[in-house]
Image 1 (cartoon, rainbow, N blue to C red):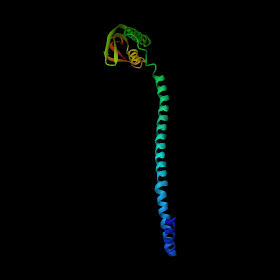
Image 2: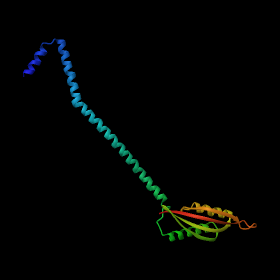
Image 3: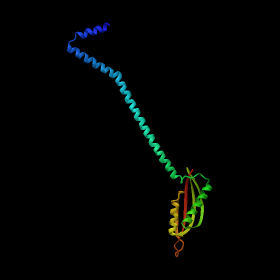
Image 4: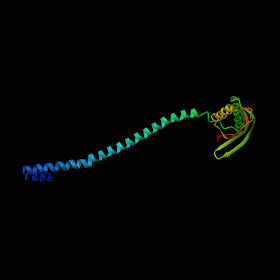
Length: 185
């Protein structure tokens, strides 16, 4: 009570202009005090929450993009599933490969003189099946046969080939080639 009386006596001795300045100063100090103790921490907390919300929104957007890509990846896997085969034994795979080459030769009207498995080479994470063959055909049929091998869904490639005319009188060509297929382990 004594302190309030001292403050009251102090204010009552001030002139009108000094009282206005005093009240203005007390008001400014009160506003600064409220700003530093109440408003400042609230604004800081709001800024922190806004940053967290922004980061969460970015994380959600990235997750949505990944989910959208997941569907595309599933579609690509379905498209490429013909290239993905069940792992079979080496002899089954070689037999299947020989049958496929024979089917493509018949489709292109190519006469297979000789076809032999060239073996299996394992290197790291894949197996390489090799077939050596000799065949005869007209040049257009031979080119069609080679194209069919290269564009087969079995992912075969012709590593090397040698084409020679069978005789001067006929248009038949003799061809020796090495066909490979690489299979992942």
